[in-house]
Length: 254
Image (cartoon, rainbow, N blue to C red; front, side, top):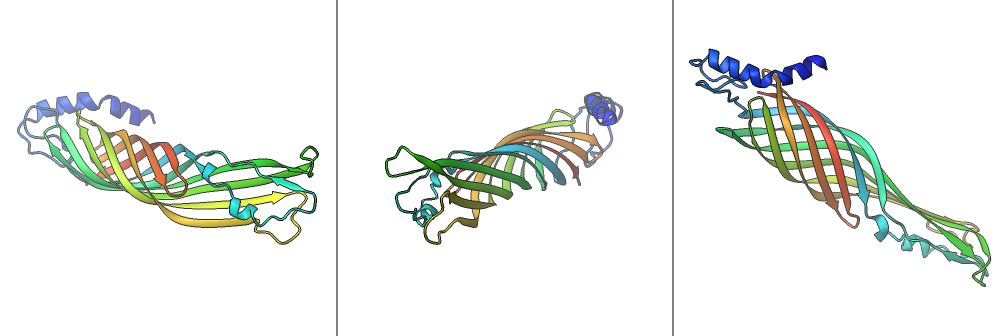
């Protein structure tokens, strides 16, 4: 870690010194351009791996579980009172990979990137209601309604734009992609229904969404670079999920 931080701290000074010493050398891939400048060549293909940590908020309040609840026929003189579901939230980490191509125009760098992340988000929301006698005063027990929103994989195509400052390339990006969402639902009541009921359900589907964020790539040595990034992601279906993550990555420019 100390070596990595020292390499970043010395990056700008090293760029200027080497450019001044080598004014007549041809440009090298991942090295310095011709002339007495400290410009670094970011152009070309690159690939790498990443880890992430973030928070998801899923608007699961639209899931009333009413289709399940309709199958619960209470015993005589009993009334089930189901409570609506609220927001589902979760914090978790993930890992993935990225790869793309940069085109450089002086210090301006633009490019396209494919980005994949495998998340472990498992957001849960539960509504605990009551079970009343016909007088609506006497409480017998409780009803329970639950939804778990799992978001596992998301792959996106991104457009990036940045401005190079020697070894540092701060950038912004926007992207569009597709992911995987699974919703697990369950309900229960005490006392239970008088006939068999639909108590649980699980459904997986593809979800589509967009992403946007900012980051910085930093040359460590040669073609090796480190990455720090923030991404906002929104995926929609019958459930809307908003995801905020921070990421660290390591890549190589070919």
